[in-house]
Image (cartoon, rainbow, N blue to C red; front, side, top):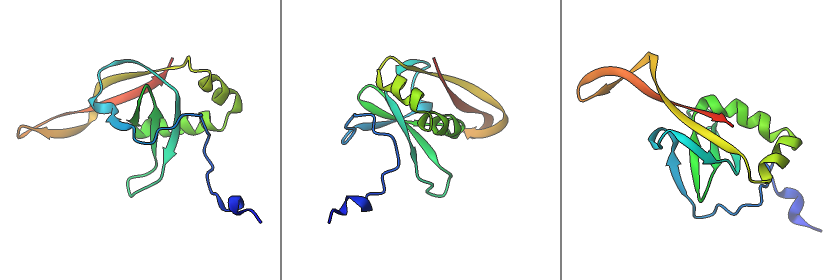
Length: 119
């Protein structure tokens, strides 16, 4: 009898061993284009599901607004194959929220947010 049936991995295998890779916060990265080598959904730890983007030697914590897009990508076999070819790009751009504020140096200022799009 094989115990393999008890494996619960339900994600997509992009063929990249990310063990030991460092994490980067998308909010702390520069605006620009980065290699998009894959992604996976992280479990809800009290703040909702998250998304991790596999890039060039590191993992990027994506914003909550990208979780839906990532789920769509992961459920589309054609999109997954396109990503596996290794020619996809994601774009990070920052903006100031018109709705949310944060405290910086004792002052309330517009919250700095990040958006991720695919190119």
